[in-house]
Image (cartoon, rainbow, N blue to C red):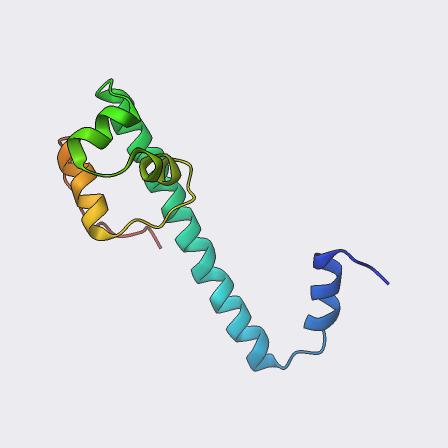
Length: 103
C-alpha cells in the first residue's frame, strides 16, 4: 500500500461522482488563484521596499506593522488584512489598485 499522498488521493478520486470532481476542480482553481495572488503581493511588497532602500525593520517602524509580519508577508506565508496592506502601501508611498486578471 502506497503512503504517498498523491497516490492515495488519486485512488480516492477515482470513486468520486461527477459533482464531487466539479467541486474539487473549482476549489482547486480558487486555491491556486489565491496562492498566486499572495505570492505576487509578496514579491511586489519586497520589491517596493527594496526600491525605497529600507529594511523590514525600518518599514515596520514607519508602517506600524510588526517586522515579523512583514517577513511572513514577503515570504508568502501570511494573509494580511486590508488594513495591513493599506498601512504598508502608505508607508511605501504606493497606491492600492484593483485591476482585472486577464482571464
